[in-house]
Structures are given as structure tokens and as C-alpha cells.
Image (tube, rainbow, N blue to C red; front, side):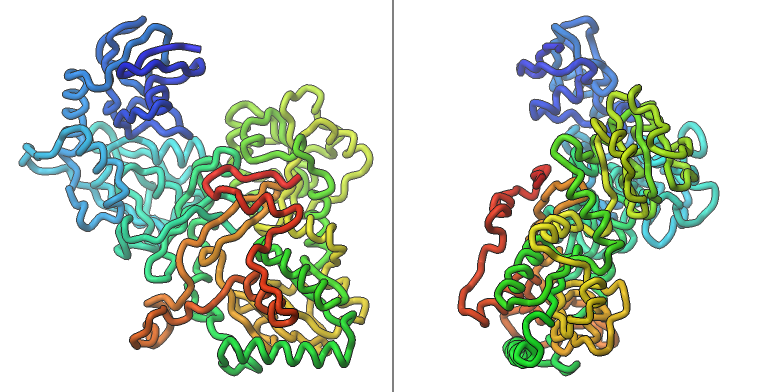
Length: 626
């Protein structure tokens, strides 16, 4: 491992590490634009200059392109290096429009930071600036080409990392242009990452345009709820309205990026039709009246039909805390059953994953990215888990062989072969093989079990907490809701963030439903209880590999100041709390029901084997529950 000195600090780094990375490892920031940890080096911006005082090479060098070597003595503050960086920044800024006051990147702009850090603060150039015509790139991403500094990050990510073909580099010399051949929406399902990866304001989130500055946002580490992978995000909100979602780095899971579904698919949080008021028989009431009515009707129901006729229904959409509390409520009421899945089709892949995975065999996205053989079984990755498809692409770029079994192999992200069965694949020749099972895969036979020995496995599931629900279902003896209803004994439901997968018989009463989405069960419920969305609470999801991760509250619950229909604004009245801020998380509502039933207050829902998850830091990689 090379040993070198950077600004009088001794550093030892792995072979192949650049001087720029070595400096960052000890907290020394060298200005850079084109270099990115996920994309590697390009040497395009020329702003990472340092001076090598001693070593195999000497003089001014570009630190992102120079491998760290034994005996190097590096100075980032040498006069020559500082002067060169200042000159390069000034050159980059010659054609920049200096439109920070109206740029959505203002406050989170790398160009702003490094311009000031590089010592360039006064503009000397008074000539005519080069200008470009912007493109329409769809309703999600705004294009402002005049802000470009030609770092090539966007094209490198879009074409090389994400496999997109409709966006790239056009023009030449000082008229280089990053865009499409013609106006139109970007086709890649990962196009939103251009917003995060661009160091200036060329690509900004159009859905949040002109809404807030970086310092205005409410932000916290969170998780994507749109599939089972548990990608890490940073939602940004203001005035109780979710404005945008940014990717959050987690090397073990999503790396640096997220898919467009996770970035732009959160309109339901701000939807005017979102439940925000307790209802009894579809009439607005206060919280105390709603809960008192629920307890009264529940008592009458149990007296008339008996506890065995009641089902408590949880959901893979609900946090682990909520599903644990649902099991406690079942035990307290002596209910006939608890359900975490709508049907066997939903539950079987999750239970198979829970029964098959161990700490040694569970494959993370990082494992997939470093695999040398990948078998994809019964899965449309771009539809079911886009970021897993992106992970497979990185493995393919590194030389991995990709095989499709019982599924179509028609993606442009990677090239692979169709195989008749897992047993036909050369697993013995691979050092890091991975099998990815989709939600549509067939149950493995004995030959598949033999193949899986020593191979890492990834199961693509449906919801953000499918794996956690599978563990609870096994622990609590739960059955799918469709199976419970098929027996004919269930006469009533208490539903918590559940989705119907089959038609609910008219004779079955929905005594109460708790959710933040206007589902069929909420429409049918006798008592409808609104709940907080995941960004309005703190909780835990267990992803498809059995990794428990915490998410923090991003914004307080309550009515947003816009988007509420014809009135367009919450009630204009003087009050100490925001309208609608009395909504509680699903687990807290269940805890309140339990408290009203037996007088015991529950403040810590994670107990027993789950108690260790209470201390997970949301900014860490998470903790395995296997």
C-alpha cells in the first residue's frame, strides 16, 4: 500500500487510489468537478491541480488522474497550484451566466463552493458570453445549458453508468452541448440522477422549481417505499409539502443513485384526496369520538360474533413498528387471525426469502455490482426493482456473465443469454455468483437447491417491508387475507395501511381502516383513521436482503399550504399548531387503541428480538435481522 504525505499529513492508501481520493480520505478537499466516486476520473475540468514536491513525478499534476505512490510529498496549498486552480475557475466562469439568484442549485452548488474556495471572487471579463438554447427534457427535469462547465459527468453517468442512449455530448470545442438530438422526455428510468450528479445548475428538479432554497428545506435521512430494495434517500420538504427527493449514499445498498420512481413517484404525499380527517360512517368527527366509536362497535362485534371472527390486517407498506403493534392488538383482542399479506402470491416470495437467506447467502446490491455471474430468474428487473437492474449493469460492465431463466432478456442495460434452467449455468466457474429471484419465479426444485449452495441470493419482493412482514408472519402464524376470508369465519376487519388484492365479500365489515392513502378499505371503513406517511414519522423498514434500516421524520404532519383543491390553502385562522397536525403514525394509533382497551401505554414498539433495532442510526448502512 503506497505511503505518501499530503499537506504534512502521512497517508497510507490501497493500490490504485488517486491523490485526490487519498486527500479526501484524511479530510483534505481538493476542488474537483469531473471526478465522482461512482464514475471515476476523466481529467476534464483541470481544477484539481496540486504540486508534487517529492516522488516519482514532480511539479503541477491533476490529482484525480495521478495514482498515489510511495514517497510522494504533495502540497495542495502551494502558490503555483493555487494560482492554476484560480485561473481554471476564472476560465470556467467566463461563460457562466452568474444567475445564482434565480438558479435552483443555489446553496447546494459545487461551482459556488469551489469558486469561492479557489479565490476567484471578482469578474474581470466584460466580453460577450457564449450562449446556448435549452432543451425540453420532459416534465421532470429542467435544462439550462448556459450554466455548463463541461465536466462530462452527465454524459458519463447517463451513457456509461446507466446505459441510456438518447442523451449525450453534441458539438465541439467551445460549443460542446449536453442534450438530446431533439426535444423530448429523457427515456432512461434513472435520468433524475442528472439533477444530483451535475455540479452546477444545468439539470434541476422541475417539480420543485422556484419553490425553496437548500437552507429552507426540512430534510432527514429516509428510505424509498416504492419497492423492496430499501434505497436511501433524502426527501426535501417545506411548509408540510414534499417538494423533491434526492439520492443518499449507501455503498451497501443503492450506492450514490436512485431510480426515477423513487425520486418522482411521491405525489400521493401531497395529494388533495389524501385522508386527513377521522371519519365515522363517512362523516367528519374528532379523534376522541372516532376512537370511542371504534371501541364501541368493536365491543359489539366481538360480543355478537366472537373474537375468532375478527382479522387484524397489517401491510408491507407499514413500518415494522406498526406491524409489530398489530400483532400485539391481535393478542389483546384474541382475534381469529392476523394477516400481513393480501394473497398467497404476495406472501410466498417473501416467506421463501425469509426461509432461504442467511447472513452468508443474502446478496446486497453491492454484492450484485461485484458479482462475476448473475442468474435472473422469473423477473422483470426494470419493472420490479429498477436499481437492481442498474446493479446488474455495473457487474456486466465489469465482465460478469448474465443469464435469464424463465424471463425475457430484452433490456438495453446489459447483454445476457437465455438459459433453460439454473442447473445449466456454469456456477462452478464463478467466484462470486448471484441468483436474483423475481416475484414471478417458480418454486425451486431439488436441482435448483443444489445450485444455490454457496451462491448468494437476492429476492425481489413487493413492498418496502415485505421481508419484515414475512418474519412476523412466520413468528405470529399469520395467513394471507385471501386465505383467511376463504374460510368463511372472518366477519370483520381492522386494517392498517393494507391494500386489497382480492374482492372483499359484502358480508365482511371493515370496522376500521387506518391509512394515509385513499384505498378501497378506507372508502369502505365504518371508522376511517388517517395516518402519517413515512416521511412524517420515524420507523424501520426491512429490505429484501433482511437489512433493517431506520428512516427519520422529514416534516411534521399537517395540511400543506398549496395543492388542496379550489380553496388552495389551509384554513386561515390563528392557532399554535398547523391544521391537520394531529395525525399520528399507524403504530401510535394502534398503541392508543391498546391503551384505551387495557390502560397500558406503549411508547417503545420494538421489543423482544426487535429491541436491538431501536438503536440503528439512520445514516449508517443498517443492520441484518437474519
